Structure formats: C-alpha cells, structure tokens
Length: 116
Length: 111
Image 1 (cartoon, one colour):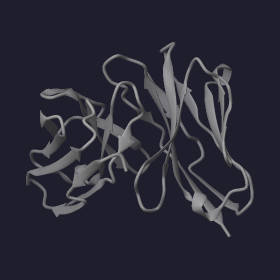
Image 2 (tube, chains in turn blue, cyan):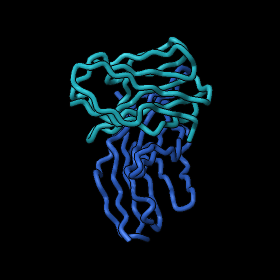
Image 3 (cartoon, rainbow over the protein chains, first blue to last red):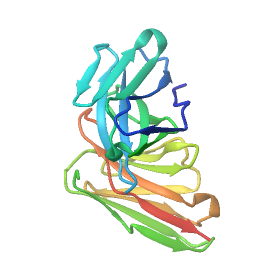
Image 4 (spheres, chains in turn red, purple):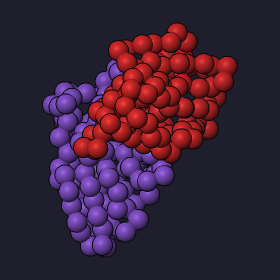
C-alpha cells in the first residue's frame, strides 16, 4: 500500500528563519513520483514540484529546496529565509507512474505560520 | 489557473437531498479527478476519469457517483447527502503524465 506521512502538523517560525517540512513515504512501486503542493489561506492548491524516483538530485528554486533520499524514503522541503507569504498548508503527495492515470496519495499536510 | 472552474463554490443543503458538483475545464485534458479534503486526512481521491464515459473509483467512493459525457465536464453526484459528506471538494485535471492541477474547490455543508 502507498502512504505519505507528514508528522509535523503545524510549524511556527519568525520571518527570515529557515524551516524544513518533513515528508516520509511508503510504496512498493519501483518507479513513482513525489510532489509538493501549497495551499495558501485563500484555499487553492498550487503545484510546487514533482520529482521522479529515478532522480535523487536535490533541487533548488529560489528560496525553496527539496531533498529527496530514497534510502530513508523521504522528500523534505526547506524554505530559506521564510516570509509571511509562505504561510500556508503544505502537502506532500505520491503517485505511481502508469500509462492510465497517476492517482495522488496525499499526506495530511503541515500548516506553516510565518510571523513578522 | 489551469482553466478549471468548479461550481458552485459554496453550497449548503440538507441531509437526504441530492447534490451535484460540476468541474469544467478548458484545457482539453484527458484525465479528471475528484478529491475531498478533510481535517486530519489531507486530500483523498473519490473518483477519476480517463476519458469520456470512462471512470473509476478512488479511495473514498462510497456514496458518490460521477459522470463524464464530454471531455470538458466531470460531474460529482451525492445521491442522498449525509453529514459525513460535509467537506471541501477539489477537482483536478492532468494530461499525459503531467502533474495534476487543481480547481479552487467547492465548500459543501450538509446540515
């Protein structure tokens, strides 16, 4: 069975602090995708990143970075120098790689509050 | 956004009434999905579609049905709404292995 665990329910930081959101996954598939989505207070879901299980290279996009480690089944997300606008719920998700559809399995989310 | 419109955006209804939520896309994507979001559960897949008239069940399909008679529309129906179906419902679309993009959600309250 596939499962995604986000053990941190809520994190509070002060602006400019670095923060890491943890994501641990379980799957029997040898090929899979990992995702992060952001849900700001306005409620929409915003796609941030997708990672293929073949590619363990870390990725950086501005203040965001992602650390994928197959050995520990983790796909952690770090925000450097956090800002108030980063306040949101962040979801980690997992899907298989099929020719039909890639159904997403979501974690329960981590609420990040960044205070000025 | 990725050309996804959900309607209505908010709805309050009573137990036992039928409810239909609509997802409309302008992207001509093949795949469409319905999820529900509940505290402590994240998002869970209800049903999905891989083409016109081609649908299948997700993780939490009991009490829900779907239909897709046109590429652009995916309807989610609660035949007889129950209070446990109070939730926020999200539609998503994708194409050819690309990441799913989500609509803005429908907040449904069943009293």
